[in-house]
Length: 163
Image 1 (spheres, one colour):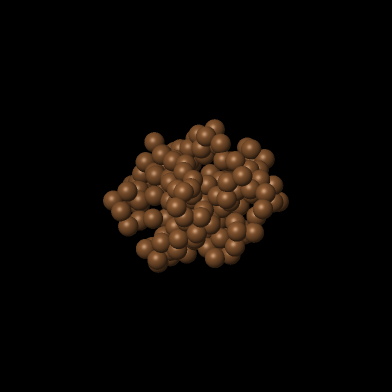
Image 2 (tube, helix red, strand yellow; image 1 turned 90 degrees about the vertical axis):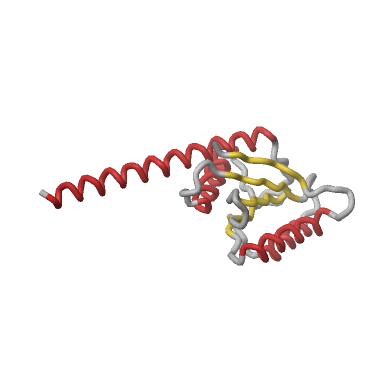
């Protein structure tokens, strides 16, 4: 079962935009890899868009996504799950993500801007978290079924070549 946890960039001590920038910088320094996302892959440009939004209720939403199986293509799972969620909810989310593999629990940090791509404010409701979790689990199952089919085909081809 996938796990999706939602949190906010509010702690009372640091302005949210600074907390977001620091969090993204920390992830980038630790992982030494590129961000991926819907529109921008550059964390600085993403933070600037958050900083310029004026109508957002929350500047951004932070999601921590853990997977059931390490063999999955985490990047593809997130991209497809977000695409499906957007179609389901009819919302154009503006988001950026990075796979965090340093710990014993590989996971994805997913940051969703507090305004959609059209500048409309949004709230990432708990029901959205549940829908995202369902999408991720469906994609996990699809990927595992595809891998099983590929193993069956490979085994079949090996048996044919022996005969």
